[in-house]
Image 1 (cartoon, one colour):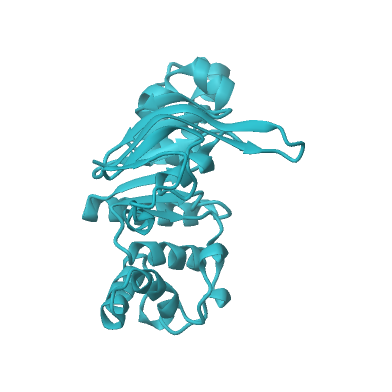
Image 2 (tube, rainbow, N blue to C red; image 1 turned 45 degrees about the vertical axis):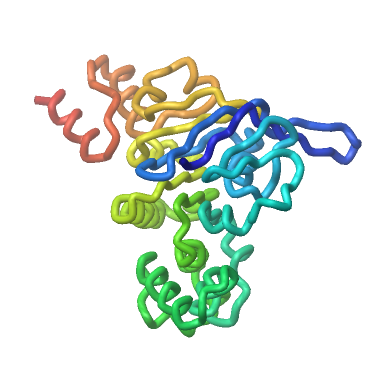
Length: 285
């Protein structure tokens, strides 16, 4: 069993003392293994609030959750070890600085395992393996994490969560601020982690190109409600939903534009640049 949302709603108090709903009656199942999920929607749609519920960082206002067999409701239950939940469901924040605070990369990545009472030598081994898994070599072990590039900081923050060996990995906008090449490097990293460990990975993103190319399941949020759940292919063929709430990937946009301006009959549902080029060449021939 992984994560189950059962009619979960969450409200917060605004500055005017009025309650506002962040998510509303969300029912959702996320398996423990083998899922690669995109969580999408406009800013303020409830994505991050939903993600924070996944490792009991916040609690439902109404409804309840089941996280690896533990029932999570509005009130904190003293019988539940919430640290166990947060070890099973690792959450990587959008801004890596929120998770970096030690003087060296190795110490920073070791912190999580040691916080779960793993002895120092084992924590060190876990940390070194996690650092290598995110594509950084031994030369980073003694470097100050605050002196790294933005992309390197993201990798270190991800390594800090991976070192705790979570069953489910949740990442909030991990590719934000990166150029297209940097985004793809990180996405290949997450896909490799998913494929080599069978871990379920949930990624919050605004990038429809990445959603279309990489993920096998997508959840769309709008104004706190889940409005779509299913395969990306079916999502992008739903023109009414896309045009009202999201946007098409660039590959589809290009082919749609060519069809419209040149009166062609191209198959617009192509995921990669190579697929787009092949479809254009076929039409030219």
